Image (tube, rainbow, N blue to C red; front, top):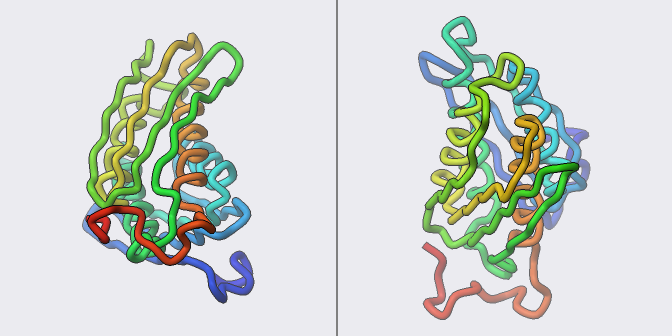
Length: 206
């Protein structure tokens, strides 16, 4: 990932390039980063949310997307989630030594949202979040769920997101991204007490 990542010796990195008739997506991640990001999707609000995801997970991210925005933002958002998920899965490898589980309630002004994750190799999303308006600016609020579903399915994680309460839709969306970022940070970190073990009695995470 060039100068953004610096020395990648002993780091866990993954890169994905994905091209369809609808989007061209390039994603690189470093799980052992500092939350540095370089993001361009053509969708301003989405770029802001992805910056939060990188910053608060401490996962370095380079994301470049060219999508059919003349249609709408859907393909760009979903395909970005697919590629980020695939890149994270590559970076995790056999998931040896990770903490695996994390859960967090995150507050932002009047809003509180919980995220819980099992980096299990088994994809699943439980989504209990509602928005009071169909758009945040020009961004479709329904795309927040589409992003996290694509991320969970392709990263191979079980992800639960629950908005307890909130009045501002921007805050609700942002707490979803920030809370998921924080649980990803905790769950994907190496646990020094089991650094050489896969955290499962089965001996594999799949």
